Every structure is written in structure tokens, then in C-alpha cells.
Amino acid sequence: MSYESDAEDTQFLRAGDIAGLLAKYDPVIVGRCVAGLRGSLDAEDVAQNVKLRLLNEFHRGKTYGETPYRVVVHQVITWTLGDHFDGRPTDVPLPEGWEPEAPEQPAAIDSRSYLMDLFAELPEKTRRVLELRYLLGMEHDEIARRLEMTRNAVDQALHRGHEKLRESVAYG
Image (tube, rainbow, N blue to C red; front, top):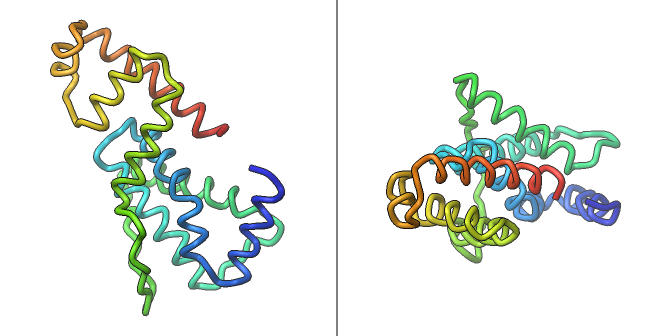
């Protein structure tokens, strides 16, 4: 992220446009949750809870001083993932009177598109394994049969893919 991005975030905050700000960071939030939870079905729920946590902080009047909002977003993701792994509830109620605008596209399409973009950077074999696992929802054994690989090779490809995705999301 750049200083221009930080300035844009500040404009969103000053204008009270938290929906626009959350929409901007949605791919980052979803991507880190998917990578952090290794594609678990809980990833989208945890990502939603991150957004609710950020929304609640905004509605409570929380300010961050000189801290760039992108840093706040990543810290809230880290806390929420930590709560999830520790078995603590991560659900946060919506603030009173919050009426979100209807999204232009369904979130599933945005998430799918974001994952496809992330996967495009991976080596072909790893990309194909991750696409079958996370875009088509296939189990490890099904992937192995379909790609004529051993189950262990599928597990290794998933592991390598998760590592590369974690790096690209963390530093992208």
C-alpha cells in the first residue's frame, strides 16, 4: 500500500463512508482469512466477523490517531483469526440502525474472482489443485483421482499453494 492509499482511507473515514472503506479492503480481508484458515468453510464467516468488528469500532467512534487504516485492518484480521483458533466467539452484533447497501455483485462472485486472481500466480499443478479444492469444493481424494496424482502429492500441492498465497496476501 502507498501513501496515496492511506490518504484515500483518511478521506473515506472523514466522509463517514465506512461501507466504501470496507469494500476497498474486502479482498484483503477475505484473502487473509482464506489463507489463514487454509480454505476452511469458516473463512468467509471469520472475514464477515472482521468486517463487523471494524464496523462496530467505527460506529463507537473509535479513532486510530496516526496509524494507517490498512494497519488497523490487518490487526483486526489477526485478532479475529486468533480468536477463531482459540475457540473464542468472533461474532459481533451489527450496530443499531445499520442498513448496508446492496452490493453491486454477490460477495461469492467477488471472492471467487479474487481467488482466481490469486491462483493465477501459482505454478500450474498447484493452481489446478487449489482451484479444484476451493472453487469446486472437491475433497483431497477426489482431486487425486481427477488429476491422476497420489493423495500425498495433492496434500503437498495444497501446502505449497497455501504458503505462496499467505506470502502474496501478507506482502501484496
